[in-house]
Amino acid sequence: MTDTMDDPGKTFYEVLGVSCKVSHDEIEDAYHDLARKLHPDVTGDDRKLTERYMAINEAYQVISNPENRADYDESIGVNQRKGDRGKDSESRIIRNEAKPGADMRRLDAKLKRTIRQAEGLCRKDNFWEATRILEIFLKTHPDNAQLRKALATASLGRKRYHEAVNHMKVVCKVEYSTLNNFVKLGSIYIQAGQLALAEKALHEALSWNAEHEGALRMMRKIEELKDAEKPPIQRLLIKVTKAFKRKE
Image 1 (cartoon, one colour):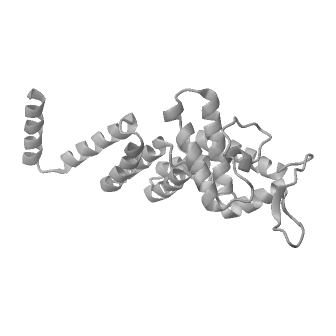
Image 2 (tube, helix red, strand yellow; image 1 turned 180 degrees about the vertical axis):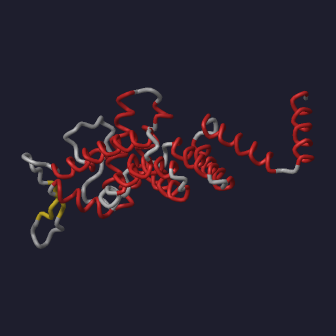
C-alpha cells in the first residue's frame, strides 16, 4: 500500500493503494487503514493530508459499492486480459486518453451543483424543493456522503426525523471515522426525542476521541434533558447533590 500523495490522474484504486482485482474486504481494509492515518484529528491542519483524506473517502464511496464499482470499472476500461490457457487471467486498466470516465465526471459535477442549489433552497426554508432535486441522484450516488448530508438537512427542515436519521446512517457508514457525522446523527436523535439512540451515536464518536468537544457537549445536553423529565423533587435532589460535589 502506497503512502504517496494523490494526483488527479490516479484511479480510485490507485488512490487507495490497491489493485483493481482486489476483493471488497481488501478495499475495506485499505480504506480503514488510510482513514486512521489521515483523519484530520490525527494530522491536524495539514492541508495536503486533509485533501488526501477527502480523496480516499471519494474513492471508497464509489468502489466499495458493487454497482457503483461496476460502472466505474467500465468507465475507466477495466477489462479481462486473456493470457495463456495455463495461466490465470489478470485484470488491467485500459486508459481512454480521449475521454476517461467523462460521463461520470459530468454527472458528479452536476450533483455538486445541485447540492449547492439545495443548500441555497434550505437557507430559504424551501426544504421540499431541495429534497426533490436531491433525490434524483440517489439512484446513481446512493453512498455519496455529501448528497446524504444535504438530504438529511432537507429532511430535518420538513420534520422528517426518520428520513434524516437514515441519511446520516449512510454518511456514518461511508465516513465512519469522521466524528462530526456521529455528532450530527446524535443531534437528530435528540430532536426526535430518542435520547438512548443519541447516546449510542455519540459514544461511537467518543470511542475514537474521548475529548471530542461536540460529542461531549451533546452528552451534557442529553443529561439536562433527562433531568428535565424527572419529577420536581428528584430534580431538586440532583441539584443539591451536584452542589455538594462542587464544594468538595
